[in-house]
Length: 448
Image (cartoon, rainbow, N blue to C red; front, top):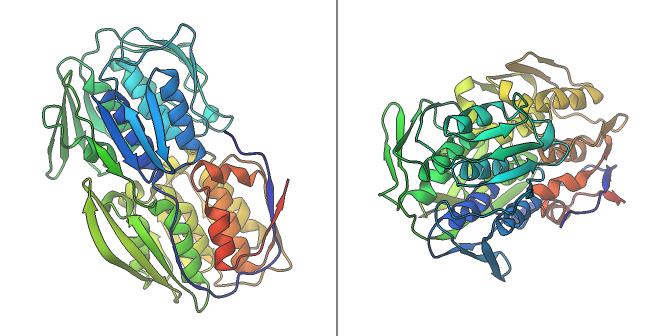
């Protein structure tokens, strides 16, 4: 179910707060849980699922492919696995991935090596603009065909391979592409090997880790993932912790808002996802991880954050894989921290829901904060905390949840008169965002 279009108007600064909250569940794990459950044997149980539009798009696509999914209670789902290669599509079936790049890449990984499929695939206006060139090239190596030829964005027609053969892949920083290759390799003949030079999110490997007959991982200077195709996958129970990307926005707000503290309960702190926190701890940020637990090979903790004075930020390219979704909120922190902050290795931000660094530059410029953007680097000339009550921020409909959330936080910290169009896009990842903000004392108007 898609949420109705609405805008947000902000005219007031947020007061100090001292709160304990829970953020929405992890989107990456929720989507992967459903997809891997669908190709496993027997019933997999997924608890504390993120009930957002991207996850609903996942459920809808899988049901169209013949997978039975049952909601037992709020955030608790049973996935009746069909096994490898058993997804079925009626002739001329159309799958809509909505706004989700994760769903698009991972499900196409599964579909590419599932025999006898001929499916039209597409997304919303934002996803349809994103390049799928690397994904198409990789899945073509497994034998899948994409039509029209030489077209790199949705809508596309995918014709699966009936006799897929495993491939060798030298992985880049994209966890989605790595996961697509893993999922394609599971139903391919022979060995699929992945050499990972730079670590990226490993949720897919963690969910599959008990299937020793199918996946073998060697950790060294370079991580080697070997996928042994055509072996049945075991069902699993998955408890999804809070999303660290969602938590980052409330952490940033707290750091910058004088005399404020927040405790965020049960957040996933997988080491491939904590770049945001590592970067800020180096800048004197008061951030602590408490009550650490390990479940399903995933680490979770309570995150305690206290407002403080920060130093300017400097990030190197190797931080990108573990900070992908948090760069935009780091830009906000940099803008409101005195001094020059530099972000390197950010070229992939241009192939997200929007050209993210470019759009953030435009927003910062509206309140007089200078920045310099090249293809792979952004410099922000931070002014410290400013009163922008005489300035206006307008964010057009970009279909980008992270941009909308960043603009919201920038507005409630600086008092800029702000209108964010189509704020409903935030429901793709963080449906509780506005409810939590209200609880913290933020004031805003919803305009239908």
